[in-house]
Image (cartoon, rainbow, N blue to C red; front, side, top):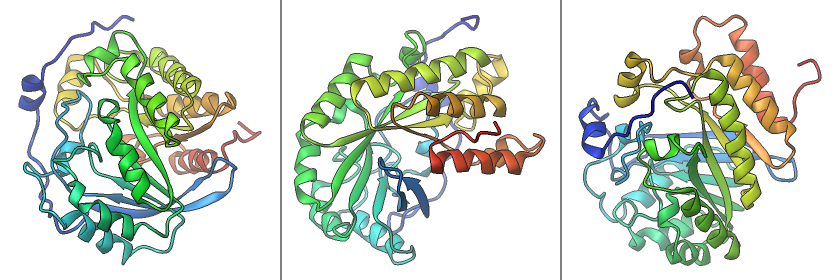
Length: 308
């Protein structure tokens, strides 16, 4: 590693922020339909909802999800109304993602009082996917699992297994914490996916690729079912500062391609590359649309085209 790692505290991360976007607790700040392959390779229509609720209490160095959150807890009943609002406008799907810019099992974000109404709204879905911090994986997860009709899957942020970079992300999590969370969830027949960062701060280009692949391998070794790799991007304030200081830069598009190719060739589980906003990140790349379509096809088929 040739980039010095520096630790930042909550106050420094907060001071680097800009303003939040204006959101309403009456509707999700975004929702969409997408298709992803199941573990058996069958394309599955998926309703993905980005719920509006109280900001996550963890101040991760790289996170920009706070931009679409509220400062206070939303009122009881607003989360079910948001879900209903989105489902009224989305086509039928077999699985649903309820992402809330933080932790589904943070009671200050999503009240347990809303669980019965949420369970009723998602009763037709075969799979319900939520996100959560590893330190908040406890009996609340199993309690919610008992209320829903479908299979519960929880997405956990592993980010990286790099021994210096992970502590620097201010996630307040160790690899042991992550492993314990995965073990607990799997013991209770809750499936797990992991979020992995491609080229977080303090890593150069080749290190960014290598550590993303190692992190995916580590997640699979614990029994994680699939991994979503996220190209790290500026825009949250702190990463913009680190970018100006030379301690962070976005991964090359070729690194995005190489990482997905190598992770798929591990044949250890499903791997998805997050393609959100890549058009904006790489406006000057040659054959951009063709390359993005190739990435999307790899996500869907879970295979590397023979022409690669």
